[in-house]
Image (tube, rainbow over all chains, first blue to last red; front, side, top):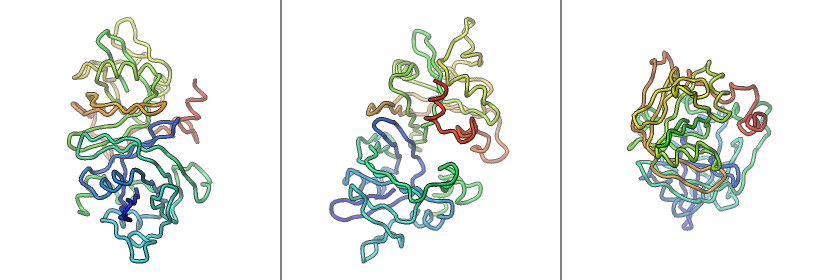
Length: 156
Length: 156
């Protein structure tokens, strides 16, 4: 997940609690840690992008488990190049697909808050040969027998 | 997803747009068709159960793509036995795991609404030998190269 506020502050974070939530309009629901930088910036910006990682993008995944750092030239986050998406949210280059959303509402009920976003733009870099979900990186592929909570526990 | 209202009306439906949404309290987010029977009954009942299907439970999955029917003796939905969970919501027998939730809030923004539920009870029938997510039935295993929208289109 990537976002940029009006002051040019950028954030990027790995999110795994993501689901489509409606066909019409196309909505997604994404749950993020309520005391995180990505939460603050999405809330302030009112929009965000989801960047789907590919099977071999373990390095990108690990890069974004750590706090995002913008490089001086401004076009890389944590050494990964990006461009501005249609809402201004950063869209990572070199990923199989992206979804750009405007924030519709936020559910603040737990240690993670749920962002509900309306999809305003989306793209596929290269049409996959088989099922689209077979080219995307899964959390369980990052480390054998590792679940999100344990993984985060080991990295932080 | 299963639910029962105060008048004993029961509903059951296949849901695939499901994600955990918080650790503390444990929350889940589930998106369901806004004009469906399951939506009405969950909304009225204020609680629901999620029943995780196992790898070989294709039959159960297909049974619940159709409108749920309660049998006369009252302890089967669409020929599948259930018991009352801790909130009164029906919990299917013979599934690997279940989660019982109280409805915390509903997001009504599209053709599907998002139910946010607080987990009040959960159980595992038999501890899986490997990863828990390897014993659960995936939507893509119901029919090769089939996605939810196409599948529903064919069945309805």
